Image (cartoon, rainbow, N blue to C red; front, side, top):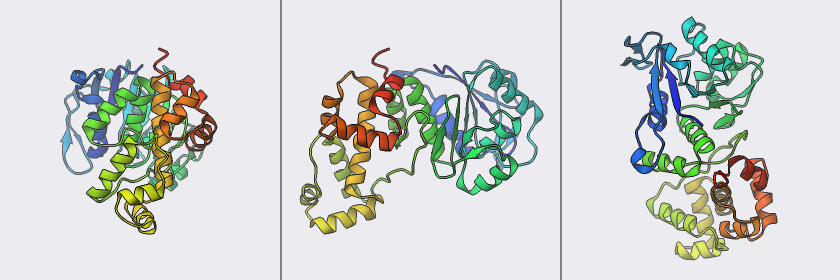
Length: 318
């Protein structure tokens, strides 16, 4: 379980990606039942400012020695360069050698690669940087078409907001969906978009742009167990089926069936984590109707069977 989190900073730090890490791991939400992390901002010298990519400065409270007992070491996005402080790379090597979990956001993966601690691993980064990462580090297995890659003790994310997905996924993996949901709700973001352990998360299902459609999506989410059809939804939206289907795609970027399936799979993940419902009952509660249909959609979306997912993530058993 992750208790101590060290975020390493250096010159060229990207403030948004650093802020994402602080938001997920650095705020005290114990009043809502979220475990408090021992969160440390670590730089080459404690108390000495590092320059961010936008001209502002950040003063780390800790030196890099504070990385040495952290359960999770996070490298936020940083300006891509040929040289990073050797003391920073050494700290990452020590963390990797003792088995700490490593998380990079966007271009932070370049620092991990420069330290030589992820050779041959499956990773991602911002799609704009994928070719450069491949050129510099040809041993890496780079997938530029996903939000993040979970490879056990290494989690790498794509650009900017994908860091939120990766951080929340890691919280979900380590502490369960309830904790991830609380943090996500406070951040006003989806607690998860797709995927599970060692899965490669595909492009997300967008939210609706118009408030009226957002209300409909909320209603659909609350009635996933019902056999919703385009005819039913169009009637509720007071429009024809053809107009509804066209508007739904325009608003969300996907079809009503694909959107419902993604939400039902996400609900199934939560129930698999938090309950011991048998698969037939769980399938009915998610709107799939049968365990066979649940298995089909779940494996296609998440990459593993519901039973395999439950074995890995179920906190009810613990």
